[in-house]
Amino acid sequence: MSDCILVTGGAGYIGSQTCKALAAAGYRPVTLDNMVYGHEWAVKWGELVRGDILDAQTLDAVFSRHAPAAVIHFAAYAYVGESVTDPQKYYRNNVGGSLSLLEAMRRHDCRYMVFSSTCATYGEPKEIPIPENHPQHPVNPYGWSKLMIEQMLKDFDTAYGLRHVALRYFNAAGADPDGIVGEEHDPETHLIPLAILAALGRRRALSVFGRDYPTPDGTAIRDYIHVADLAEAHVAALKFLLAEDRSEAFNLGTGTGHTVQQVIETVQEVGGREVPVADAPRRAGDPPALVAVADKARRILGWEPKIPDLQGIIRTAWDWHRKQ
Ligand SMILES: NC(=O)c1ccc[n+]([C@@H]2O[C@H](COP(=O)([O-])OP(=O)(O)OC[C@H]3O[C@@H](n4cnc5c(N)ncnc54)[C@H](O)[C@@H]3O)[C@@H](O)[C@H]2O)c1
Ligand SMILES: O=c1ccn([C@@H]2O[C@H](COP(=O)(O)OP(=O)(O)O[C@H]3O[C@H](CO)[C@@H](O)[C@H](O)[C@H]3O)[C@@H](O)[C@H]2O)c(=O)[nH]1
Image 1: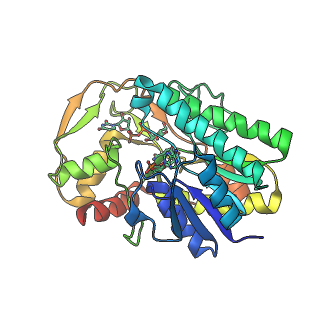
Image 2: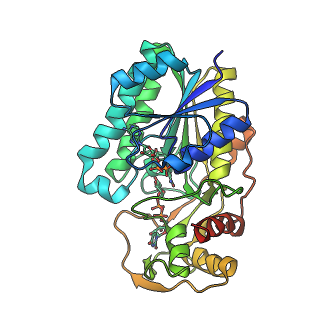
């Protein structure tokens, strides 16, 4: 079997970290990225093909040349707010792009996909922590686009024997512990980088979106999972797929939630600087708490987060942003 793994969106935040983990595990990652949000400097492990998953010709050329054993599919747009104001963009790129990719996989007889899904497919949780069999009722077009792809993958399994692992990430955070790649979204909307950049004086005060949530300190709770741990989970999911030849879905989180206020305090502890904050209203569509039931991936994939603590996660992010 080919040692090549096609990584769509491999020039992005989680994709580039996963290429590093793939290379360390003996695979040959090939990145396909249209570079709308990707960074050339982030493609350090394996070849970069500039191209769009919506373009069948590009896909045919990549599959013919590399004959990948599997696809790890990160390429998507992921701004929840923008998905509400411009849903067409999200359905075209995320759903249309994934269909185009799946069609190419069928043309080239590639039968395995690891897919970047999200806890946003659960919508407003009915129970916390959230198990994989929790009902999936997204509350925004981004979440819907990811749920539609999960459904396509199930149908492609039943009809064509194309197997997948859907990885539902909670909040990806942190940077490469070796400091080679890290988070650089533009625009940046995520809490941890914004808190760090505010502490470093490179951004205005951090807006705290809501202090009236039904949580111990009134701010919203999330389950932050280190990007290098996510990357390792993709390698474990790939091995599972190739060995077991069956489809599964897994939450990827630590199982522990932290409030926005705890994140701010931890950034202050780690960085030794104050995070300037400004209270702001709740952000539309933000649930009060999202925390994973996180043991299925441990049990079946044998995966265990190596940097499960918020301090450790924020330390790697701090080191990354400070030297940028
Ligand atoms: N960051 C998170 O907390 C988080 C949480 C849950 C799920 N996810 C999912 O994980 C994946 C990666 O997220 P990220 O934070 O690394 O995002 P990112 O924007 O850094 O990476 C996505 C990459 O995909 C590329 N891309 C987008 N559309 C493309 C297309 N049509 N053809 C080729 N390349 C295309 C972009 O240029 C970018 O490099 C996304 O699918 C996202 O929805 C992220
Ligand atoms: O400037 C900010 C940014 C965020 N927050 C809060 O911090 C928490 C985390 O927000 P953020 O870092 O933006 O992550 P989420 O909105 O939880 O979104 C993440 O989790 C989603 C699943 O819900 C994924 O699909 C997304 O891709 C991923 O960014 C939330 O309570 C926000 O309200 C603030 O208070 N101020």
